[in-house]
Image (cartoon, rainbow, N blue to C red):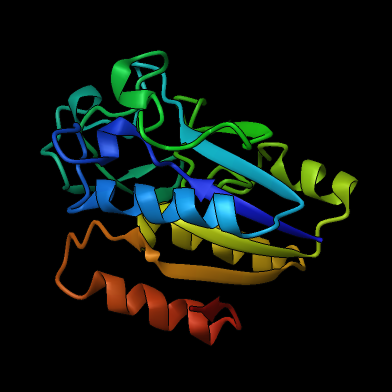
Length: 199
């Protein structure tokens, strides 16, 4: 049993969004084709779903955007405000085919801790419910696609692997923030080192 996890293909991570990932929208059509052509037992989508007062936002910390700070004892990038609950920027890209997506997993809802992974908050204390869904259906293997490779895709794939799923990242259907040059290549190397298949 195999699932597709579509990570955070939201307007704010696409061109003209508040935290735009370069060419983020270019993965939408390939993902649609994958959904149409592959026979997955389950398709889920994750969404960053932050309250306006989220403490990962630079604006709530009098901090410079993209500076490093800490949040709840975790190293934390101070992000521009993005994917605020019920905003246009938090909606999935309008061209993404959502007809076959059975579950929508929201994350980053606790203002005190960020949540890159589709499975857990960054402090690993709170689960999103995604693992429970996969277990209930009997999923053994996951393909992970979406935005962004070096943050939420990577964290989701890492947790999937740790939870015992055969884990694949379809790298052509991801894009990276690349805050530092080469972050995409480092992310791939880290994933491979953990036994995650990067295709």
